[in-house]
Length: 330
Image (spheres, rainbow, N blue to C red):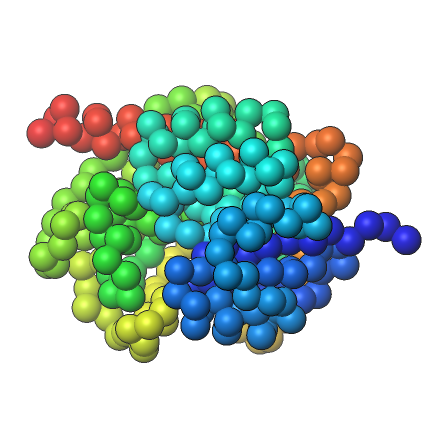
């Protein structure tokens, strides 16, 4: 029987609720301990994950039975946690953005080096629609992705005081649209050659601007247009977590002229491609493994994680350079 690894969860906030099912359904990883500065949050996640709330983070570092630590704290508080994880020989799973700025991202990369395994989860992590799109574009039946466009509209975060702080999270693109920057790079399978960035404020009084746009040009000719705004006062369903109205509009075009969209209105999620009246569809099937099982499989095989540390650092490097470019124009 294959080994099942023990994991600990540090940071028991709202993000974790999206992962509960995958964690409980994982065949290769089980959560044995949780920790959060807010004891009530730690106890709640422990109940959901059949784990035990730890009395301190130090108890997790000192536990030789724990193989992996999931660091789901805000991005600006990770350096000390990553150091302790590496010192105690524990592999790391974290989430986007890796850090609030390029300097800290490079520091985390240096801390980790090749000492432990590290994966950075994005919205595409464990997403069967994205993996179906990747197979379609790489397979060549309708050509390669040449134009990717994503527009996001939602209310600015109100359940914490760091998502809108440029010193702690970088604003709407760093906080949210970085998901789609990573997705665009993944689907094109290409290196970024150039980019143009705009950051403006239209309606809100926040520490950061409420609207940002990045055009990314890839070396082989593809482009991505990535737009996000927090300007609209859309509906907020909860002030304790990420429960807000979200309007997302996504379009993709291949180099052979196919218009590609994700569909799911009939309860059967699929990818749909159209060209001059011809329609092709691909059903989206569940993935064979949870993202946590994939982490273990890659670690055991010695292959790169699907969402690895190098990718996460490159995303932040692009945004760092793009923001500097904007400042120079101003």
